[in-house]
Structure formats: C-alpha cells, structure tokens
Length: 328
Ligand code: UDP
Image 1 (cartoon, rainbow, N blue to C red):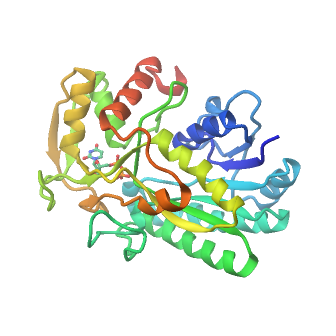
Image 2: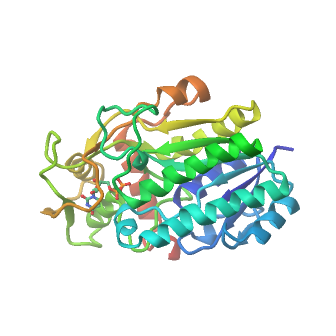
Image 3: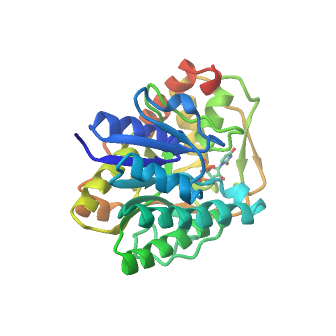
C-alpha cells in the first residue's frame, strides 16, 4: 500500500493532474477542495473528495487523521496576478492565513511533510535570467508576495516544529492530459485564451503591453508542461521521505514571448488568432525564465515534455474534447 497524501486544491488545474499522476504511481490520495474554482468531476473514482476550506482547522485535522495522511501537497490558493492587485486582502487571507491554519492542523494531527505550490512570482523583476533559487526575492505583485510569506512561514515552522517541506516555485504551467485540462472561469491565462480565439469563442486576444525590454517588446515567460510539473511533486515527496527540505524552481529554462505563444498556437491549431495590443497588466515582470538545475540535481527531476508545441497541442486536444470545459 502506497503512502497517503492529502492534496489541497486537488480539483484545480495543476492539482487535478497531480492527483491523476499520484494515483497512477500508487499513492493513496484524498482531495480537499472548496470547489470555488475547482471541478469536482476531475477527482477520479475511488479518491475521496472533502469539500471544504484549508483554513478549517477542525475539518483538516479530522481529515488528516481519518485518512492516516503521511504528507500534504498544498495547491489550494488564489492564483491570478491581476486579481491579486485588485483584491489584496482576499489573497493574504486565502494564501497566507488559511495556509497557516493548515500547518496548525498538520501539527495537531502529527503530519510533518508538506509540498507547497510556490511561484516564480516570488522573485519580482529579475536581475539575472535564468533565475536561480538564490536570486533575491522582491515580489512586484500581491500574489507573489503571498507565496513568499508562506515560504517564510514554512521555513520557521520547519525549524521550530520539525516539519519537512519542499517549496516548488512554478513558472508557467501549460498543457493537459486526456482527462484533465485548464478551465478557469473567467479565463485569464494566455494559452487557454489563445485557444478560445482559435476555437472562435472569442474574437481576439489582447496582448498586455508591447513596450517591455524584451526582444519583441512582449512579456517573456517559461512555459512548463503540467505533467512535468505534477511529476515534480512526486519527486518532492520522495525527497521528504529522505528527510530533505528545500526550495526549487520548476521551469524549462526557455523563454517564450506572448507573440511566440500566439504564433505557436496558430501553428498547432491551423487557425488564425487575431490579436491587438492593449495596456500593460499591473504586476507583470518583463521576463521570468527558470534555472531548474537544482531540482535536477537534488530531486532527480527534469522536464520530459519541453516542447511548447506539444504543450499547446495537448491543451488544444483537451479543449476540443471538452468544448464547454468541465460543464460539457
Ligand atoms: N497575457 C496577455 N494577454 C492575455 C493573457 C495574458 O498578453 O489575455 C500575458 C501576460 O501579461 C503575461 C503572459 O501573457 O505576460 C502570461 O500570462 P498568464 O496570465 O498566462 O500567466 P502568469 O504569467 O500571470 O502566471
């Protein structure tokens, strides 16, 4: 019998695909999700779904004990840069306060291992690219700040109460599996929006600024296949079993601009993607590209699907098989 893992936010985009891959790898999984953003139908048959909030200490403690949980993977969070600048208090409440309550429940239930979904947003505007984990952390948006604060809490909690943690700083997740894909309401992410335009559901895409200090003036991001991202959590659980805590970037080390993504989506779908330039989005750094060599060395993880076209192709296939998202 594999070890038992509680996945918070396990009905969301990255969470659902991680649940899928954990179950395939033989872990016993319990999902905790308040379904405010997640989709209950992503949870595989045989995987218990507890509907509730990570900040509910009694519920989480009870769940950890009832399922004899060995480790927690903590995805549940608000995760939109633009929204975080409009609703800072909600982001600190959900990503920091509720997260701290989750740690309290873990202490109460005697669970001492956690993998945390952090973000490249902790770095802010990078001084050097690719970014290493030792790069200074100075978030330029509320979302990134909430992730950094929670990492600090984890650091102290680890020192003082002996938990082990792995914090994974995601760059930009992309792609899908056959069962699970990206379905945010409303959608705000670049690749799904480009595919909605390709599918004729939106007339055009707005490029948020073309006057950045990048080769084509649009923002550069490091897109990483969501299957690779999910597999890093399994590698992180193995590291925790060896008693190793750490903080790791997860990216491909390749930068793609907004215009590169539009062109790749056009090429994969064979459809035109009309776009126009609009104003910058608040809180967007110009370039975020990862060095993931530490994860390679210490977690033994490396991306198996580094091609942007493959990620977009997987996302396009999911969109075509789920024309109305999870509602359909
Ligand atoms: N972006 C854009 N138009 C859109 C959505 C996103 O130009 O309709 C840009 C956004 O400014 C950022 C990049 O695409 O530079 C990736 O944004 P996304 O929201 O997908 O991910 P984030 O980088 O915020 O995690």
